[in-house]
Image (cartoon, rainbow, N blue to C red; front, side, top):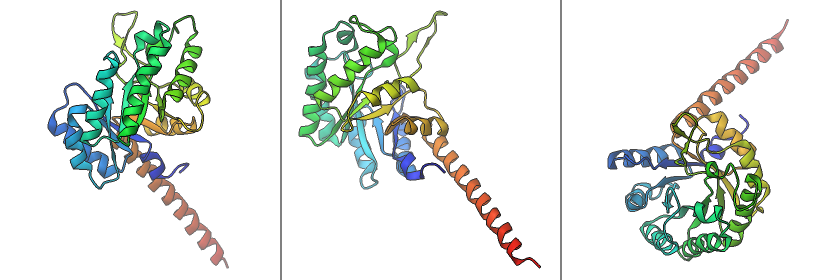
Length: 264
C-alpha cells in the first residue's frame, strides 16, 4: 500500500455533526473513532465534555466546531464558545469565517475574527482550523476572482495564527438551477491552491465530498493532512481489505518462487 494504515487513519477527523444526531449516536461515533484510531472527532460544542470522557487515553483528539455552520456569530461569541469548548476538553477548534464580511471585502474584520479564536485557543493549548466554505466563493467577491479570494483568505488565516485552512463545513449547501440544494465540498483544485498559498507552518484540511479510500488517498497526495469524514469505517475497512489482498499476493509470489528454486 502507498501509505500505512496509521498515516491514513490519523488524517481523519470523524465528523459527528448531523443536526439530528442523538446522544446514543454521538457516543457510538466516539467509540468508532477510538476503535479505528483516527486523529479526532469533530463535534458540536455541547457534546465536548462527554466526548472527552469517552476518548480519554485513546489518543483521539476532541475537536469542536465554532460559529458553525455559517460563521455569522459575533466575534466575542466565537471567542467565548472557543473558551468553553476548550475548558470542556477540546484540543482542536474548527471555526467558520464570516463569509458575508469576506465577500464584502471587510478583510480587517475577518482577520480579527479569526485571530480572536486563534488567540483564545492558544491560551487554552488548542489549535484552530479555519473553514472558508469554498462553495460560496465560486464567483469570487470583493473585486477578486475566486482563486485570488481564496489566496487572500489563506494569507489572512496564517497571519491570524491558524494551524489549518479548511475547504468546507460539509453543510455549505448552494441552490442549484433545478431548485435543489447541494455542495461540492473539497476539490482537487482548491486543495492545490490552498496548499500553495500557506507556508509549511499551516496545514490543509479537506471536508465535504471525500467518501471513499481513494478520495482520502488523493487528499494526502495533494498535501492535505486532515480530512473530515463520516465514512470512516468504510474507508479504513477498505484499507484493510486491500492490505490483506496485497499481502496474499506477495505471499503467493514468494511461494511460487520458493517452489521454482527447488527445481530439478
